Image (cartoon, rainbow, N blue to C red; front, side, top):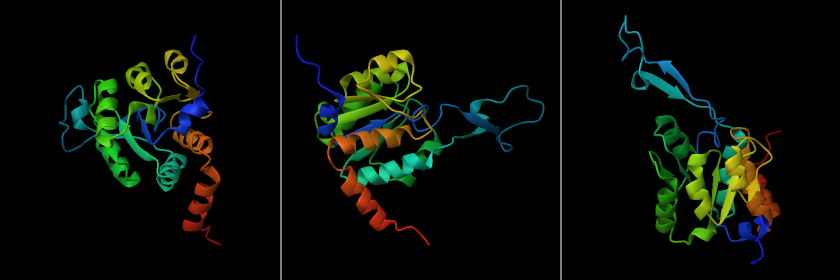
Length: 198
């Protein structure tokens, strides 16, 4: 029987960190506000197309992307839904790979790693629900957020201490960088570039 490879050993090889959005970057809740321009008085229901979607993102995850970039770790997202809010956040974070409207995350994962020019075992994927399992099963390091569904936790090599939307991505970045022995240097570099305002 082959020896099981630990999450730390897997993390040492990671060059690319990919992640889901709803339930990972966010707490999984979706908020829709009526769009006055597209809604008509007297209509019983308002479709999602006649509404404005918004999401909440955690600042710790934004810092995580900056830390990953300093460490030379490439980043990107793969999500089933398409959202202008996500596109805006991806631009804000300067993510290298952004794949929205992806119904087969396994195929999407393979597409991104091919584009990145690396083997699948050098890429990690962070997920929370069963739609993420096809990507997690291919990834060199599969990460589940703390509040992921049971099946996702069972398929993960590592589970974050924090829930999705509450700094889970930061946990994933820290875990990888610490396994690679880069954490202290990256933290020092970050603090040098972002000194505290007195």
